[in-house]
Length: 240
Image: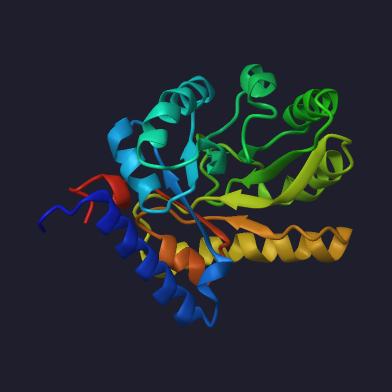
């Protein structure tokens, strides 16, 4: 397929999100698109921002913070205010990077331990704020994957939700790479059901479900995703 500029590819993704939402009987405004910018050249990120993209995702703290600085001048050149961007940390957050990440992202997607939550809470409270986080759940059972086991989620919710500096917004999870739509939907449905049980058990709203990437975001939307994280389908002309 002939490669398209980032703006065109971004519009195509938005249209696919809208169609998936219509299929699920949902409003397209219920789903937030996070453009995954890790390893993406800065000019392509500028093009996406110029086309209206405001939620950006990175998975390494140092690189994310450096990119924010590098983008500031470039965005001004195309009339985009850097302050309007919402940066998401979408990778697994290491404990030794937690203090540096605190207060620097709109949402941290990859928290999977009470210890990590405690570090973030202490740092956020010291800054006079609450850190918005998602708890990462291991949906595949693969030992090499990050995330809390589903059976251990209630204990983690209880440990984290009461922390002074934490705003627990919901859950994050990933289907196994290469799963067909039916298998991916079962994984995503499992995360949705976990969130529902925790809402009923705790009374917490837990409004966000971050699930779905370039290869399976439509399946995730069908199962209730409120955030999808898409990189290659926007920025890689070979990802069609």
